[in-house]
Image (cartoon, rainbow, N blue to C red; front, side, top):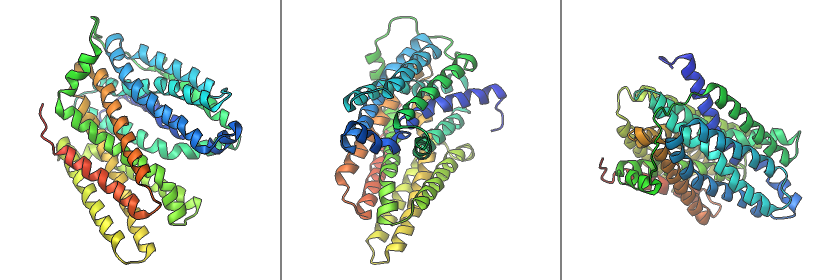
Length: 394
């Protein structure tokens, strides 16, 4: 990336590590679900609740760290959040009941989300305005690729350690990121808010900026589409398509590359198209592709052809998400340079909450057919398209 010095690269690498904590924490232990259920003699569904409690803690925790980062600087809240994450991860490795795992995972999420929230604020603090979109594109690649890679990494770890070892590895990651932050991440909030502030009032003032709310919703819908993809992908590829586990890994890897490409071309696109139009065009393409996909699925053609079209469609969608993640983040947060921590918190909370609603509706609709999966993607794209074209005011 032309124009970035060694110190700037060092900062973006550390921020990428901090951002990766959330997807690592949600997906690294997925291969251990069966082992956990056997340890506590409960159903896999009971183990899945630990994922739900983590997402709940992650959504609520984001509202906490941003205002702290605006008031006390960026590094101190990161240290506190990582310390909570490390201790909670160690506690996860030593729980005695499934209920304890639910509760400790909630606390782990509150700690883990601090680095994600504050990383976005540091970008708006440290980098020039014409560089922020590029930086957000790098974080978007990490957030998009990590959920795809983490289960495979967890599977490898389980060959050498028990499921408890997975949480020990997360604690090690947290400790490593703590050290990197301590020695190599500068304090970027030079003018923290010293006076007492009303956090709720600050959130309400940001929400009054309709453009912020709309781009946060669009980011949440994009995240929801990605979560639907990762949750239905194994069923689609292994059950419906009847492909091997090797093909499953290959398809996920190809789509991960698609997300990387989508995020990496932002620097090129913004030379010719303003960011808000990039979002509009991307959502239009996603919606159009969804319509074409549904038409083909409804046609009386061979199953193999339908699946081939659907896999091409999935690549298009994941590629488009790679474009949407950094662009919506930049458009939503950068206008709030004086309170970027608070804006980042609210942005993340809206994004997670919206994605949760998308996945909840998806789970209620799921009937084991490729048509229903296609309709789920289509509905998300249409809603995103409609939301974006609501009247935006500054």
